[in-house]
Amino acid sequence: MELLSTSARDLERAAEAIRDGLLVAIPTETVYGLGADAWNRVALARVFEAKRRPSFDPLIVHVSEPDGASEVADLSVPYAKTLSERFWPGPLTMVLPKLDRVPDLATSGLPTVAVRCPANAVAREIIRRSGVPVAAPSANPFGYLSPTRAEHVVAQLGGRVDFIVDGGRCPVGVESTVLDLSSEPPLVLRPGGLPVELIAEVVPGVQVFDRATTSPRAPGQLPSHYAPSRPLYLVPFGGVSGIEPRGRAAAICFGAESARAAERHGHWSRIVDLSPSRDAVEAAAALFDALHELDAAGFDELWAERLPDLGLGLAVNDRLYKASVK
Image (cartoon, rainbow, N blue to C red; front, side, top):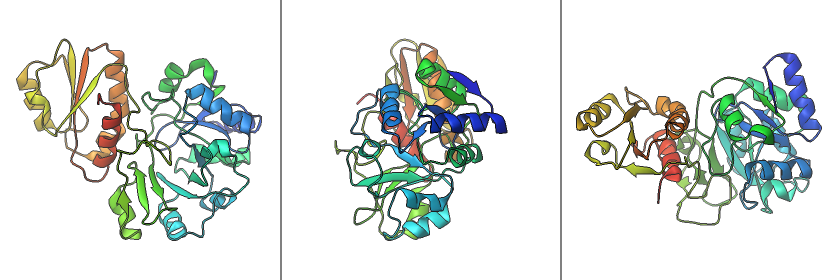
């Protein structure tokens, strides 16, 4: 594993590595992705091997420009063009009918492909220089915390990745919103960095996936995912102050009032406030950093309160649910 900078020379090295079938962790605005040539089946297999990822969980294919999606997907379906013009580059993944040349390994044999044009300029430049679409799931072992810094990738994947491009902290901090346009009505399969409310302005009647299913059609749908090694329990908003934890425990709060209530309770070894001002965007950006830090600290239990189900609060709650004890 070699750490690269964002210099032009290192970006060219990263692009060359992808062309050569190697694995390169790249920064995006959401989380770090484990990039591989989407046309190269051996490279795709290495992604699954490195992540220890179930073969039934499809990968997201990334392109450097919105028009590049036409290399892998049929953009003629309703709303696809309008959404790409409004939200790309950005944290929206669209599930679209795939073109025949897309390897089944990238789509887990499904007739659809998940595609995104990221907003991060470093990611787009690497993809552009590589000359190929880049399959890039989150750069972490399957089921573990998603990485929002290069050091998270180093700690979790280490020698299983060839290069890591250090682009600093990911500003959004949660994965992209996944929208299935191959279904009727269109369905949000995974809440994420683009609020569902904004999608609804373009796609009337859009619905949100019911996580009770066990047959994922896109990345990030499995009900248990992004989990720390310590047990994490989810409680309603403002509920941590009423918990009697066992052993050394940490509380994850949303808002100064909730954090003060938890502090008055007196049973917590550590209290983390994702956003004292109750800003869901700030909370989303801080979420994985907080979980990584608390997981490494060796607490017996972690307790997190849900955010209001508005905007990015829905995405934060989705990640907390996946990380929690069911």
